[in-house]
Structure formats: C-alpha cells, structure tokens
Length: 390
Image (cartoon, rainbow, N blue to C red; front, side, top):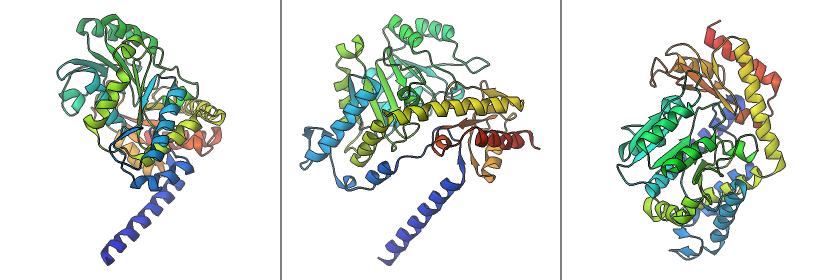
C-alpha cells in the first residue's frame, strides 16, 4: 500500500513538471496543441468509469442512457461541423481509424494508393513493410516534386494504370493546399474510394482557411488533438456521395470499429471531442485558424529572408532544410534553448528517414498562447542561429 501511494506521488510530481515544461518552452511541433480546460476536466471525470460497448441505443451493458446522449451529441456535432452524412466518434486515434476505414473498403491484397511518408504522408497511408496498411494491402506510393508539391498529373497516371481500390489522401508534413477536386476526379475515373485524412487540416477546414474534401471524398477522417484542440481520439465522417450512400458505408464503418477492432469506447474522450467540436464552430475559432496561417506564413518568410531553404507554406506548417543528415541534431540543439520541434525528411532527402535533413515547424500551439509577429521574428532568429551555427 505504501509503495502504491509513493508511485502516485511520483506520477503527480512528474505531471506537474511536464505542465511547467509546457508553460516555459515553445511548442512548434505541428501536431501538438493546448487543449481546452473543459476538455481536461471531462477527461478526468466519472465517464472514465463507464463501459459502453456498442452504440447509442444499442449497448451491451445497462446504465448507458446518459452516455448515449453524450455520444449522440458528439456524432451530431461532427456531422454539422464537417457537413457529412454519418459519423463515428469511437476510434481511439487516427491510426486505428484508418485501419477501420481500410478494412471497410478493401480486402487484403487489394491495391491502395497514398502519399509517401518521406514526402509528407502518413504511415497508415500504405507505408511498406512496417505498417498494417503496407503489409495487408498492395501499396502504391506517390511522391512530390523538388518543391515538395504533389504532381497531380503523375498521380493521375498512377491511378489510371494501377486502378487502386482506395485512394488515401492526407499528410503530416505537406505545406501546400490539397486539391481535393482533382483527387476526386481521379478516384471517380477508376471507381475507387477516396479517403481524405484531414488530421492536420480539420481545424483549418473548420476555420475556413483550407478547402473541404467533403464535396469530393467518400470518407473523411480526423484526429481530434491537433488543431481541433480536443483530446486524443478520432472521428470518421461518411459523405453523401453516391458510392458511399449506395453501399451504406456509415453502417459498415460502425461495424468495423466495433466489434471489428475495438471494445468499449472511451466515453471521457468522446465527451471531450464533443466539446472541441462545438468550439471549432464558433467565430473565435475561425479567428484562431486564420491567425495560425498568418503566423505560419510570417515565420516562413522570415526564415526565407535568412536564406534558409523552406518548403511552404499555405497552411499551418513548413519544412526547413538544415543540412544533410542534421535534422535530429538541430532539433536537439533547439530543445536546449526551450524550442521544441521535430526532425523531418525534406523532399527526396539524400540522408533518408533515419537521419533526416530537415525540421518541421508548426504554429497552432503558440498561436493559442497569443504569439504574433514579434515572437515569431525572434523565433526565426533563434532557429537560423542553430541551423547556420552562428
């Protein structure tokens, strides 16, 4: 008993230290953000105690009449914010959500196409050998040009010749606007499913500063802890495009998420997601999304003035070249100064993914903290110093 209490004290002490670190250091990792106090409150609420296997009105346990209402609100808010026909809010995070989507749309061995990880894509978009998406499906990976932009003509040729069952489009380090309409036409031309992974872009889409894929894609998927400022989780939205509606895709997705891949949903997370979705539809959030993009463009311009190689930006992030194989080294040096970034590959990186030549920078978190031109100009100077070594 004494040992258990000591462990509790140690954990609480470490959490306090982490809170202090987050308050002092500058978070420039594009996928990190500061969630709302209300979200933190519900994450530690009594909802943690409840098992709720199933869906609203169709649970396997009793005592779910209240959490049924909570989950239904989260579903309706997802549908409203993104303009989708149906929604699932139970996926534990983005990778499980993408696994569910692929299982619903394709059989093992069928072809899927996605952006290369080294070009700014995501592991779950078909990265070969080490991921479920690359192991259980035949993966077709497309690349970017020297400026880091998708060559839509080349992708169209790939889709036309290989005819994938699923075209999965999304990114983790792609600093340009994605042309969903072009991808929609590619998918339609071969009868493929178009999946838009908007984990990095959902907040920008909600804020009106990036086009929505909903008019062109069959499924959208987003994590909820990045620009949306919610808890760690994911939402899956099914649109009203004919192929999705004709196949009752919303029901199929639900069955794969539960019982296909998961057991009881995390109701505290779902409540937090509902809160974040509500806030993302408010005018203040639109102002925030606009500031994120303005700040990113300002930072990118300042770094370009310092003659650094910058890929981007038209959204919330950019990739900065720091010298061949020096990405991790520069990220570590910046951390010593209280600046938190992540090493990242540059387009066609000569050093490869394990010793990348760039860093990825994002503005969502520090925009929450109220940063403007003064702070971003100072940040550009500090980053430049570490990159050029002066």
